[in-house]
Image 1 (spheres, rainbow over the protein chains, first blue to last red):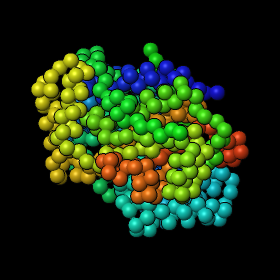
Image 2 (spheres, chains in turn orange, red; image 1 turned 30 degrees about the horizontal axis):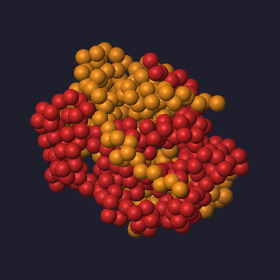
Image 3 (cartoon, chains in turn orange, green; image 1 turned 180 degrees about the horizontal axis):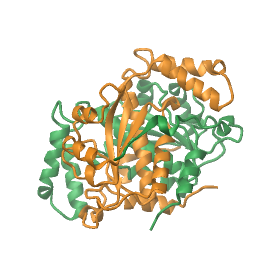
Length: 219
Length: 219
């Protein structure tokens, strides 16, 4: 059993915060990063379609070029790894077929045997007015699942993170060469290690009380 | 230090799957649920505004009434706890002021001292054409962060989960009494324990290779 103590999860959730200042001298060790990469790749998604790409920037020159597009938030350059969560902008039968073929291959079956699953996905995603009337937004939501999973994984590994929606999408996408890629950056997450000088690390965490946000419907 | 072994996280990520069949006889122990509730409440969000509500359904009669609105997916009734992730549908100065007051109170300062932060949030969220041109969608993305964090926390605690976008929003919101609440259900996540008969538990996990979805930009 892989079970982790509840206390470890709660401690990680209390320990983490939106890091304002990273220590630019510290890099995430490669074996730790490998686990974080796995947490991205293994993220659950709608139908398992994984409509995303994760760009991981460690090049200091590229970080510096991205900085002005990120409201000059220093975390972008001072972090160890800047993760750019990108959402797929379209969905078509070819992508679904590719996914079905991949699934069939991994599970030792044939695409024909998965025809019902294929038709369900196509019906939901390729028909206007169905589940996903806005495919880029549907894909963006999936990328946010990855963000949530990634931030908890980071905290569990004592890696600091700062989720970041404050950036200028057009120049950032252009700088990353995404304009004609079929993907767009939707949210950023610099990760690394907090600076000992970051006073925010000690500020009490601000959350609504449980009773304000959790509502039980029990018998 | 709360650090959790990388192997535990990887094992949890490999162990979890979108559970097709729950064991209806098993309930999540209350101390385990407490940790899962904490993972919801402590989810990071944009500006920390927590524009969400989590409805936790354990009442079997209510589950049964929700079933037809959830494509008759049995997980809704057979799970231990059905979590309904709800996104706040509006945002106004009063909410932001309430959050500022709460922050000031927790951090031993005054709302006036947080005026710059307040103005930043108001500028981003209350002005058409700024960060959040679509507030319900902005709130939905935040709820998906909670979903990602919650699913990893569940897996770490050996609790099974099945994220679920397939439901009929209008009747489900009506059944939950949300129509005039300012919140709407955006995604569901039944949690509990897999049935020993669920063959999907043993199916190989389907993910794109890392090289397909992770792109490094190193020096």
